[in-house]
Length: 111
Image (tube, rainbow, N blue to C red; front, top):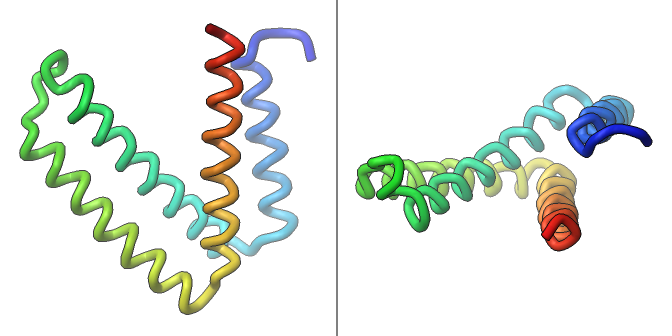
């Protein structure tokens, strides 16, 4: 496809959304989104705590508290989903692994 990677990611997002709507109902899509969001939020909190708290003036207590609360909510939600709909958790794990793999490939290629 012509254009920058930013234009490509829009197409990839649309294709992924179409695939999700074909194979999942709305509650499953929302569950996958919640798991991915909480996981991403925890990664951002950890990155701020580890690398940027001095630059942005973040209070370490607040950042670690948010990280911990996200972890508690994520663990509880995953526990409920494992007992009621294991497929949603499996799809979320596959997405997380795929996102890390693509990001790693993109960063190595761009560097």
